Image (tube, rainbow, N blue to C red; front, side, top):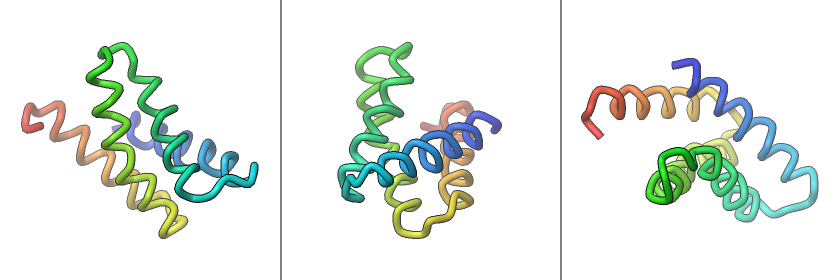
Length: 88
């Protein structure tokens, strides 16, 4: 649960915020933050990186549209719960 909270604060709140401050468009900000987020999951191999990048689109777009971290945090926690329970 704490990983979902911390990762969303870092990658949606901080990383995306800094990318936007640098003048990048929302779409480029989402793309770069998803690639960075996927990259930190390299330990699971290339398939894990790709899956994580694709999954990260959902909370990234959610954050861009709402400017609120609660939705992405809840989404991430639920996804992790499903993943660790074996449902995903």
